[in-house]
Length: 135
View 1: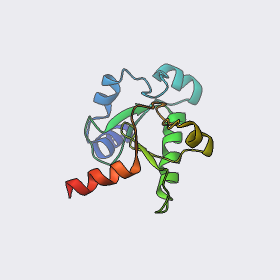
View 2 (view 1 turned 45 degrees about the horizontal axis):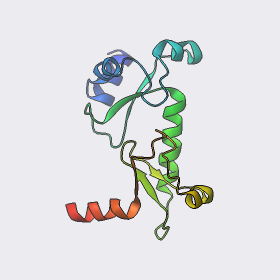
View 3 (view 1 turned 30 degrees about the horizontal axis):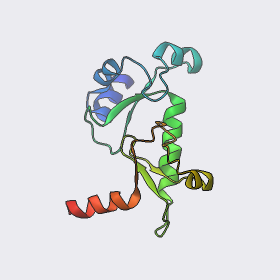
């Protein structure tokens, strides 16, 4: 089995090509095309899991290498959060935890650093309350 077929079947449940076609071979965060990506980095644009390792069309999206790296850095930082921090937010679209800077807190600007969308950001207390309702 070739490396590409292995990656598609075992990492993305056979949905990699479908996701690339759905997203028009374009990064869903910054808009970089597959051709630009190959010119700049020498390899094809990537497919990534948004939240969990679930292989579904809803959970997979196309990302360029820089956006994929930024997403992973944000995710790693969010894992280090300790309880008791009051100004924690979560982006409903990217599923990442947001720790705003002091300036953002003063200005009330809680924009997601990954998708740059202010409307998807909710306070962590609402996330926890929704989780408690489901249990």
